Amino acid sequence: QVHLVESGGGVVQPGRSLRLSCAASGFSFSTYAVQWVRQAPGKGLEWVAVILYDGSTKYYADSVKGRFTISRDYSKNTVSLQMNSLRVEDTAVYYCARSSGALYFDYWGQGVRVTVSS
Amino acid sequence: DIQMTQSPSSVSASVGDRVTITCRASQSISNWLAWYQQKPGMAPKLLIYGASSLRSGVPSRFSGSGSGADFTLTISSLQPEDFATYYCQQANTFPRTFGQGTRLEIK
Image 1: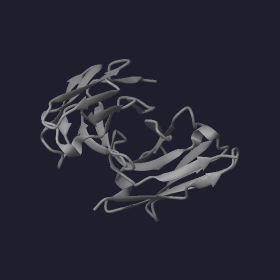
Image 2: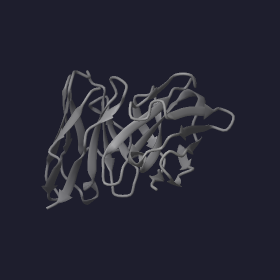
Image 3: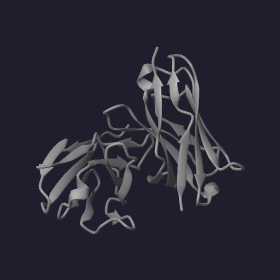
Image 4: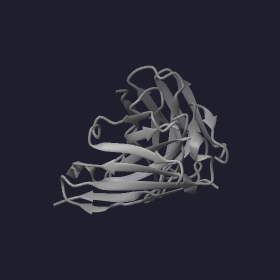
């Protein structure tokens, strides 16, 4: 059974850093891309970043480029999102999602809340 | 970036009604489109991919159509569990982009 579990959220001041993790199980981790999608309070879905199965191909939304870094650990079946220089507008629930060919999001985690506030 | 525009933003309907939601891309995306359903406090769920392919386990009352820049999601006979927010998403290029969502409410 495919399972994705996010962790690492919390409350942080603007300008600080936070690292989110996505623990994957129930599928062949090395053959799927993993993506992060966020949802600000009361708003729609915003794509954040993707890391392909190879671990070296990555893409980012312009809103986070240069501040966020996505990575994956094949020994632990985890994907991380390092978020630096956080802004108030980064406040959202962050979801990780499995993605075949980096196209569609077929399985999602339950989400983790990140609040950036002074 | 490809902009995805959904209409309507919200719709009220009754159980048993047929509902259609449209999604328009700012440029052609062939059939690289998906539809998701999200209920309050929950993660989205994939319903349709490739514009018209029904994901396994999704009820057949859901259907998708379209290609190029114009797409539709149709629910043939609304059930109580279908009241939720629906999003389209393009997979033609990065960055991936979503429509703003369509809230389906009970009349």
